[in-house]
Length: 316
Image 1 (cartoon, rainbow, N blue to C red):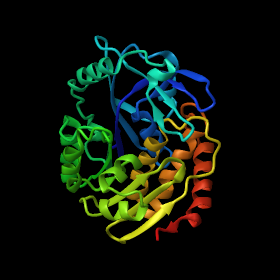
Image 2: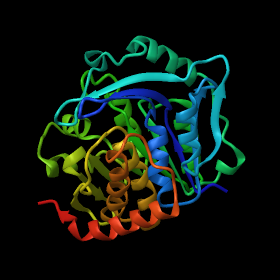
Image 3: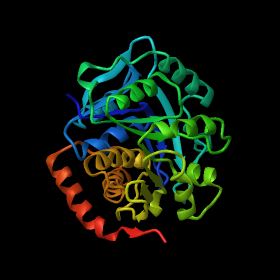
C-alpha cells in the first residue's frame, strides 16, 4: 500500500527566470513539486493528477525520474495538457506572465481547460486507499478529490491541505476557510495568510490561523522562510530558508508542502516538520525544474535537515 498520496495539477510552463532567461516546457503545476517534496523523505509516494497524452517528452521524463507511483496519473487523448507562463520580479513575486510575453494560452483558456480536466474523475487506485496521509494542492473546497480525502481522513489518514487562495479577489476565501476544521494540516502562502489575518506581523498571523481549525499550520514566506505551529505543543516557530542560490523559485512552496506533510506524519511536531518542508523547498530554487530522485539526493536532504534544525527559533 502507498503511504503518502499527493494530488495537484500538471502544467507545462514557460518561465522567465530571475536573471531574465526563458526556460521552456518545464514540468510544473504544483502537483509534481509537491510529490517531489514528499518523495525526498519517503519511498512510498503516489501521485494523483490529470493531463493529456500530449505531454512533451522532457517533462514526461522528469515526472518518471522522481521515483513516484504514477498509477493515479490519468492521461486523456481528447484533452490538452495544461500550459502556462510564469515570470517573477526582483522580490521573487509572481507578475502577470503576459508582461514577459510567456502566455501560450490566455488565462480564460487555461481555466476552461482545467475545468474540463477537473470534470474527469480520478478513481483512487487500490494501493492508494489506506495511506498514512493525503496531501491536496487545490483551490476548490468541494471538488471530488476533497471528498475522497475526507473519506480517507475518516478512516485515519492525515489530511494535509495546501490551499490556493485568491488573495487578490478573495473569490474562494470563505469556502476554503470552511474546510479548515476538517483538515489536520494546512500550509497557505504568505499573501493569503497575512491577508486573511489582516496583519503583516508573523506571530499575529500565526495566532489567527491557529484558531481556524487545523491541527497544525505552516505559513510559507518564500525567501523569508516559514512560520509553523501545532496545537499539541502550542508554540510558534520561525523556520529559516535553507541557504541556496535562487535560480528559479517556481514550485518551492509546493515542495515545502509535500515535505511538511511527510514530516508531520512522521513526527507529529510542527517545528521538525517545518524543517522537512524548508529542506524540500531548497532543492527547487537552485535549478530549473526538479532533480531526479536518488540516494545521494536524499542523503544531502538529511544533511541539510540536520544543519537547519538548530537554526529554528521561537517566534517572539
